[in-house]
Every structure is written in C-alpha cells, then in structure tokens.
Length: 433
Image 1 (cartoon, rainbow, N blue to C red):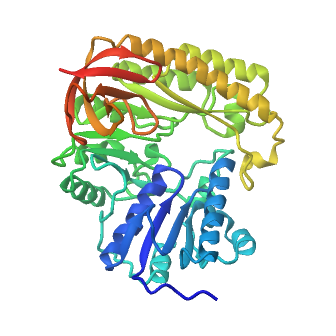
Image 2 (cartoon, one colour):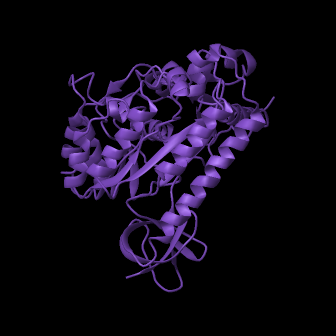
Image 3 (cartoon, rainbow, N blue to C red):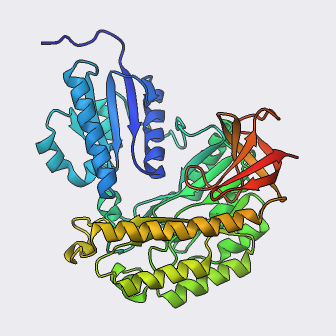
C-alpha cells in the first residue's frame, strides 16, 4: 500500500469546456488563494480539481477521459486526491459515482462552498471579483449572468446551470475595476444569454445600462459582447456600441438555423423573416459591426430542403465570422423525444460544406482589408510572428493578425496600429505603422 506524500499540498485546477467554465475555475482559484492554499492551473499538483463540461457528446467524452486519466495517476501514486466539479458532474453525478467511484468527491455547478470545504478552504462572500485569471493578461471573461430561461429544444444548459440569474451592475463594475488594476484591457462579456440581462433583478433588459457603467472603468479599452439571443434583443445596446469607442463593433449571436420548420422545432421563438430583418437592423445601426454566429446542422427532421435553405442563407448573409456544429442528441432535452434521423456522415458533410462556404466568404472579406490600418492587441508571440487581434476578433475563435517578429518588437498585452499587407482565409498579415 502506498504512503501518502509528505509534500505540501498543491491544488491543480483543470478546466474543460467553455469560457463560463474558465471563469468558474478562476473564481475557485481566487477563493483557494484567499484561504492560503497553493493553487496552479493545469500544472503539477498532488490534489486535482477537474472542472468538467457536459454540453455535447465530444465534450462529455473529453471530460470522462480526463477523469479516468487522473484516476490512473491516483492509482499510480502520482496524485493524492481527485475532485470533480462542473457541468458533467451536475448533470450525471449519480452515474459518475457508480461508474468511477474512486473519485474523492463530485460537486455540481452551484456547490462551490462545499467544494472549497472539501479542499480545506472557506468560502469568502466578500471576495467580489477576486479571481486568479488564466487567460493572457490583456483580456478576461466577465460573466454577467448565470443560467438560462430559454426553452431551446436541443440545449441541456438549463439542466446544468439552472434559471437565469443576473449579477448586479455594481458588483460587475467592482470586478471590472479589479481586473483593470491587474492589467486587463479587454473585457469579454459572457452569459448563457446576454439579451436577458437584468430582466430578473431590474425588471427590464438592462445590458445597455451595464455597458454605460463599464465604459467608465479606467484601463479598460475594449468591451466585447458574446452569446446574445436573437429574440428580444435590446436595440438600445446598438446606440451605446455606436457612441462608445470602448464597445467593440462586434456581436456574437448564435442563430442555430434558419429554416422556419427547424426553428419552430428548436423552439427558438423566431422565423427566417424576423431573423433576417434583425440582422439588417444591426447592419443599418452599426454598419462597421462584425457579426459572429453559430449554426447546428443535422437536427432531427432536417431535410435536404431545410439544409439547402440554410446554405443559401449563409451565402446571402455573408457573416464575418461563423462556426458550424453537428447536432448532438442530448437526453432530458425536448429534442431527445424526436428521432435523431440524420446520419452522422450527412451531418458532417453538411457542416463541412457550410464551413467551406464560410472560408470563401472570409477570404473575400479579408482580401478587401489589404492596405487598411487597424488597431490590434498583441496576445502572444508564436514562432516568427507576434499574434494580434482587431476589435472584430475574439480570442481562440476568430481571425488573427500576424506581424513579422524579425522586423519589429511588440509587447504582449499592448496595442499597436498596423497596416494589412496580405490576407488568407482566416489570417491577416500586417506591419506596424
């Protein structure tokens, strides 16, 4: 029988899944540090906390494999304890306890105080905005609400995250000020649904008022909007975007599909006509806006005709940024009662074709930028290039600007003005002006 290590406990937090999980891990790490614990992110540690994703099949598989990997390390004596938290644990705790019983403890998405207690730390209510950020120092996610009240048929998020709950404006401003004091220059606002922000606590959609408060925070230069639901979008947000230079001309608005039949089955509360009208209103209000969207192909009952409708619409709308995913049949969702009748190969072929179309659109839009100048933030140095982003690009998912490092020196986290010299499908090449 192996003996317990005598070294001082070091807690290693591992984050899987989306930006909301990144945020939750950062809050957990901030709490642990405040209790005097030694904590690292995805490095070596004898106590491991795995923050899991339970959203779609691939993500669930990755989470389960990561748990199994660390159970093997525990068996081999490389780690002493393994705790599991996050969405997978929230959604499948009884199954996980049965299938992988030697995990020390499982915690759901709302059980942070209990997880801290298991790690020998106290939950400190007064730590508003205290986080150990794991993103590059120049940007950070700011989660403005938790949970979702939307009834989308394909989505399991309400099962894992509960009902929509907005964070008060004053708390978010405090958090933004603390981030700015630590050198953060770009806030990426995230929630399951930005559109709904404020309805629960202010009895009105209050995203515009939140933005008005955040632009006053000194040191913050860019504020970016992620994950807005199309139905009920508060149009006063566009006035703030147009008026305030700190608000990036950028909106991430997942639209999922455009066939009326599929939208109805998805319970999206909109139609092709309404969605197209909304996008035209966006373009009219803020002509320089970049719109990012995500689509799902292979949803139950999606016929070739439905798919062709979607494809033609993607070609016509010419989104600046677009991602396409294959439908994942999730138990306990409304769509799980439908037959998952589109073969996997057809789903993949449709997703690939949409991304081919988008690649061509992106190439054409990028070619038009040659000779233009942009303000970019430098995220990192990679190989022979400094890698930056314009206000029209979010980290990890959008285009990047590559600047030859042999010709100029740039500091990570700083802004620079560059002129585009070449363009590819998803990259711009530029030199400092």
